[in-house]
Amino acid sequence: MALKVAIQMDHVSTIDIAGDSTFVLALEAQKRGHALYHYLPGALAMDSGRVLAKAEPLEVRREDGNHYTLGAPEEIDLADVDVVLMRQDPPFDMSYITATHLLEYVHPKTLVVNDPREVRNAPEKLFVMDFPEFMPPTLISSDPDRINAFRAEHRDIILKPLYGNGGAGVFHVTPDDENMNALLEMFAERNREPIIAQAYLKDVRAGDKRIILIDGDVAGATNRIPKAGEARSNMHVGGQAVKSELTAREEEICAALGPKLKERGLIFVGIDVIGGYMTEINVTSPTGLQEINAFDGVCLEADIWDAIEAKL
Image (cartoon, rainbow, N blue to C red):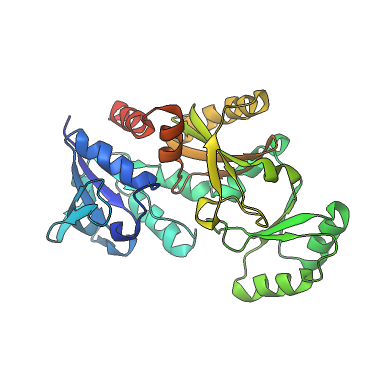
């Protein structure tokens, strides 16, 4: 079936085609004969109950420095589109939340991936709290006394913003680190949101595993090894992706999580696991497709489109 697909994303000119998951999703859609439209989150509007977007027809190709062509801008009514891929990166701020509200007006007649209501209700670092049996000791709070008490108990901890992404603002606070109070002051000055304090998992030196689930089923995994002297394993800060298989513990986590994801209409999800502990459930704009494809000889973007088309 030929579909009309709108991709809500950060500008296509900014992506790294060697690793970007949205890029291969667009390539696969194009291969299937679907018509692609590209628009930025700020191009969304609601006019007299209609959800509109100033969008540009999009063509993509795997050519460095020449990976896209955009046509003339046109206003499209998202009720006339078959699929919207909501793929802009966090932060999960009020702008992001507003976008989920607007897209909810056209979903499910227009299939939004992932379901905008569930994206809004399942921010990565909060949704994971539904599964405390699989998590390391974790505190969400803006109370310095409570956070310092958590540190006194666990000594070696991680501090990170509640609605951040990509490893931004993540700090490893060792037992002898004297910057704790300064960090709490910095977080408080930046916003009013609580922060996350989490027991530091030494197993992160062996990697932070990204597991992809498609419509609730495990599709593949890759391990991301942090570079020397870095507590974060994110690829853009020097993490190295390596081939990986699931452990029995990780299979247990996915078996518990999968039905909940399917029930919520979360088709494309990436979870992060360190040393057998789940630390995040990524539902906004998960990544990892190209790394797993390369290691496992698969095409996960095709599996995602199969799942999308099945729902239509």
